Image (tube, rainbow, N blue to C red):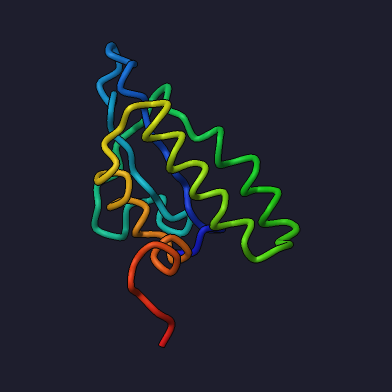
Length: 110
């Protein structure tokens, strides 16, 4: 999926009373009903606020091409450093986003 279609949700490790503490998922707006084969779990009291407003604005006015991938790096570090989630887990979920794969993995456009 492309960044513009991504919904990134996570719950900080410090939210000990929350059953989704320390977990995260990247969903496609087009597949909110779970038709991609993954069961969608409710993420109560999760964070998605860092991404949603900024990416929403970016979707309306997609100026510099580097801006979207830059936002992903900021959100990645927020989730890992501030909220304590495992970097490998976050990376694996972020690999569902095309722009992340193009900048961080060996995948190329062919």
